[in-house]
Length: 252
Image: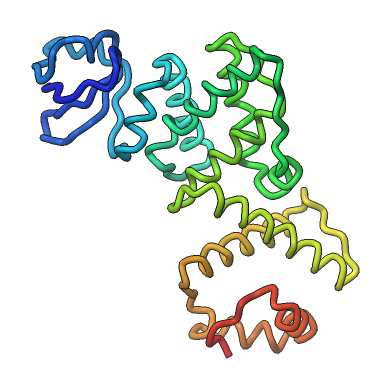
């Protein structure tokens, strides 16, 4: 394996046997003068593929121990959520965790303003974040506060989304909150956030918001689903149309 660029003493950019550029972590891999041939690959602790160059610069200032733990969280999240995550996630999370540790040591706890909404709308991600906190406490020996669950959840949600944009995620949460409030107020109902049907509603709303962001549509008009729902549930259809909860685009 050829090491072509130093990131820091324990991180470097390498070219593997498939001629693909990768980022590697390992004790002293960035110490020798580059380029050089790494013959003892047993010193490599972690390998990263498809890392955005901007995050390579971030990696240079991060503790390898934190990055390695966050990589374990990345693998856990993929397994538990059964989906692919943005490959930059371990470095983005490690950057957050490194600053979080500084705050902990100064006894400075920051509450996430979206904590309530995150617990309501993203229970699966919250569950993974709680497991992540246990891993962080065990391996980094730091007393992470409960408030970090919400922050880690937000990073997991960002990693699930193609855009990986935290501002878009926050906007999505606000829209979901507004939708729930409108439906509860105008239909005189109260959502049980733990109910299966409420969970399905929120999931559909999330996908709708994401489709609108990408300006894409489903085949609901072609397969007859929308006209059928309009016939069977005219009150709900007219309510949604009137309130503009959905942004109808050439669907009639």
